[in-house]
Image (cartoon, rainbow, N blue to C red):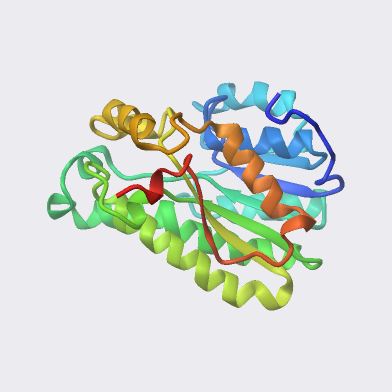
Length: 260
């Protein structure tokens, strides 16, 4: 269990979680906690290759919708929100947990990043959240909460994070501006900044194992966070207990970000 005492603080809420790849992904941690706390869940999968890994998760969580979504493919994002509108008519929670950069651009320094690679990284990892927010907002007529997953490399230089540092910085700034624009509609927006986690996406970073061991050694709590720590944080922020919190970058990293 990801929470010791389950109280259905999200009962009746409807959550779209984008980015579930397998049971190790941050998006799965969020979706599982939301479901445990009473929310109805909709999930997306990237493509037919990814679907067999997401199918059992959708079954486990009794997902109301399981939809294909590659944000780089025209029309797929619109189709997802059309399906949610048809099935539910409303939405309360949106989690954007996707990021991409071509391997050559990700593993090379920023000076060597190609224009095409930079634009792809920015489109998938940042601007897709803006597009999602625009489509989700009309479904959040009673208010709601949106989350985007960032990392400490958006604020400080993390060796080997390379092009994703500027991209995540743009994502965090986008969250703040969206919080300002959507606040009058009762929609709250947060960037979530987890500490290093052993996910498939993170494995693409050079020397990621060293980053994990360094996090354990330097974090005040002295251990890595897990995907359910991230899910619990998002659940709190999406609940009535956090109804007047918005526009923040919330670190879920055992205090690692406070260490010089």
